[in-house]
Image (tube, rainbow, N blue to C red; front, side, top):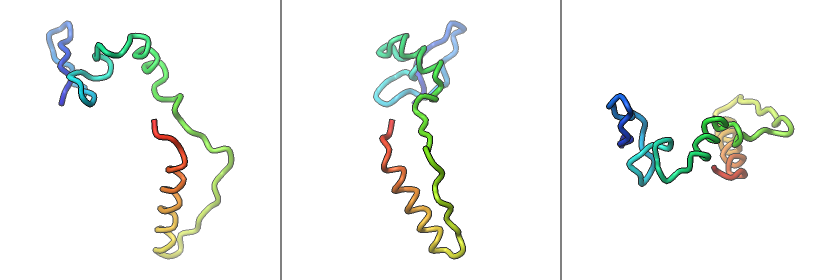
Length: 83
């Protein structure tokens, strides 16, 4: 569903509405202006995770190695909270 906000030039906002709302994040009246400004200035940068040390290199010499790599990746992603 698209945002229902009508811009000053009488065109409709083309952004997707957030879940359970008629508006996108930036046009949602339930979100404070301060939160909107913070989200705009951060651009998602504050949620980035960085590794403290390099992960060991995994050689991919046979198909089962790819399965091991995918399994390892999924396990590591599961260790971190989702924002």
